[in-house]
Image 1 (tube, rainbow, N blue to C red):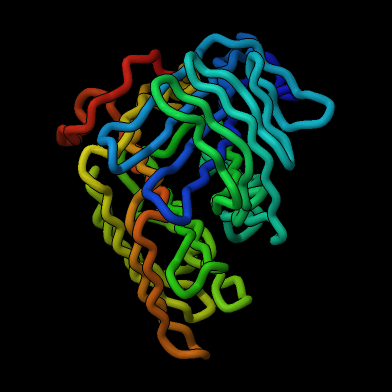
Image 2: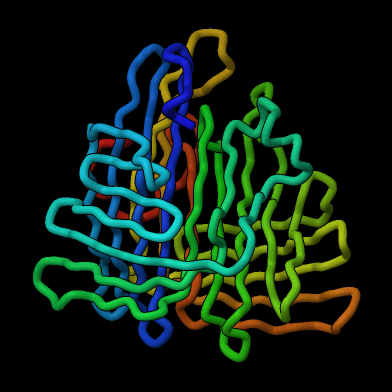
Length: 333
């Protein structure tokens, strides 16, 4: 997608993966990103975060200003790192990884209706090519034994656009007790239009008991969101009559703080530019209470199988409170 963008366009594009140990509060989040300001060639960045709630702050490293290309057998290559439909590899400072993954479910296209992928808004589009993947391989970090992934559950995602949302929440849940096949993948966003923030709009899906339930959408009503660096509380509905309450808890000291940058905006383009502080924890506890028109209520619990991300604008004058999570000392991109 970035390879076909005209030089005059501004955009960003990311492929990312997360995987979590079924037994221990250990998780991996890796991101391959392209940033292309208007009139400039794209450059890439490679991000590696490893969470271990037993050790406190996560390991974080990032390489920026890397060359990018589309490999013949993959989606994107950033420097020496590559990711494709069934494997990912790379080196990021002292970290290195070689992972294989497989998913036996169709991709998830979050936005509904489908014409939103062709519309100017939202300026961020997203899909999950592999919403319920199983990972095998190794991740190597300095000062500890290699982390062996053997059937770790997780996902692979893809997003792109001209600008990040003004504020967003992303939640992926897996490794639920008594429902190992279940997963949740939902993104919520607010955008700035004519100087005013829109209400929260949620898009995603819940898979449980062999059925995929769409969550949110433009016509959904009753969305309620309380979100902070320690977790969130969500109330979500769908046109199909499914309602969902989610509670997410981030273990103490286990959140990673990153800074994201929008592509540079042009005068009169409507783009706000700027940067976001992004809080991510991929070993969060998740509790779901689900009500369905058929099949009765469900309660799903995962002790550390949640990936929770909160993004917020850092532009002066937004009124955002100090979230208290240290931001990694790498340039935004």
